Image (cartoon, rainbow, N blue to C red; front, side):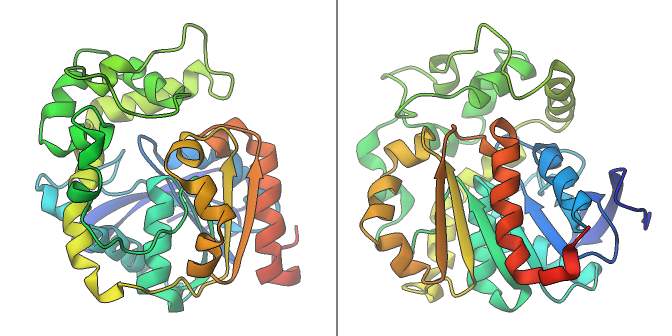
Length: 326
């Protein structure tokens, strides 16, 4: 592992929790550690703007490829992708780095992982920033029961059957699959009856303004190599996660937290998140919570990088004082 300074991104792998995790790192090795956890379908690269900003302020930014993604191991068994496995990877990584406690930032699925890290191991988290996905307490019914009314066209329902989404994705080149997800502006990710979600999503006719062709190519190269099965297996463990997390039924997040979301994010608009926030339910379940709804869509840390950087840095500064000054 290269100790390095604030400038270049260093890449290394660690054998943790029975797998190999690829980690990208930027910033001084003795700076306050910030763990950045990506979502679907992304990589460590989704944090490129935040890593630069954090490193410039003296933080040590650490962005792994989660299991199943990029240059990290991708176990074949779907059962190896429960929330216990994913959070276990993170805890093992912190142990490997001899970091007793870190600041954590997560987006999309990475936000889910961050929330569960706080739920399972609050002793390891100084503060958390979640992008796009709030903390929801364990529901009284499993995923399958709760979302049955949405029908077979609902994207998560389609992701449940091993091989189904992979076969439909394979009808397109990898860049097109990624662009279809990265450009989502629908209110509801439900395809019409008999239609696969990837066929229903539209690919933008013009380049996305927040990602260069070179960056998109970097994503595509990794997904071409690793495939989509690992990432899809996270969704296939929803019901299993519901069963496994029974001991945390009714538990709250006690770690200091900030939630950032785009005002046009499909999640905020269609999954009841807006009402969850306005009703006070979110604050009830995460008592030490700050909320920032900003202009933007789902992939907010890339689309509105400067604003998100500002929101993250101003919050993390509260927990580091002068330790992280440049």
